[in-house]
Image (cartoon, rainbow, N blue to C red; front, side):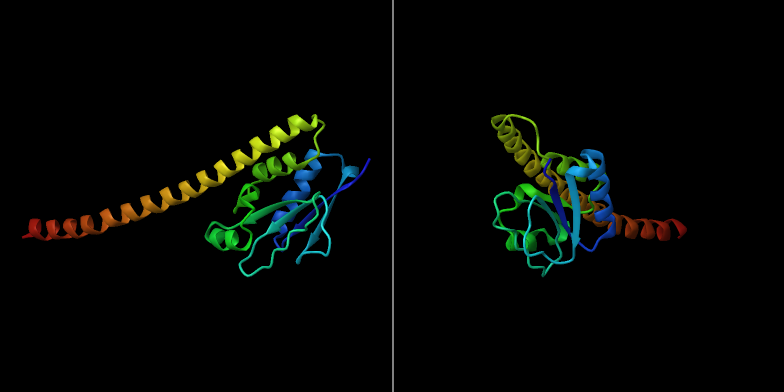
Length: 170
């Protein structure tokens, strides 16, 4: 049985540990190996997980058998999209949970489905991943809006409360 490599380009020890645990849960130990690096190795095969940091040079391998997955902070999403414009379906927003990483890596494990079903599954998964990314972005915007709205209401109400207290005290 051929071994597939997961290359993790990150300095985040927690992310590397989560990858190791996910692989241990997903596949037999003799079918995958985990390689960690701080910079992109010369050649990448199998699956490559990039932990994006602004200013980092990302050079996905032109090899057709390599699959790339990117972990990006929401505040760095625009910089990432400028650096790698074609990676929309392969983006995970930080902080990455074990369940999300497990699901993404599980989708990249070679399947035993017929190729047409696998292609359909991959296309559906790509659509779901893009929708998930948009939902995460909308949720972040909603949270920011609510925080600002609450702040904008609280400031005048606090001032009114103070003046009402002065008026009631005489």
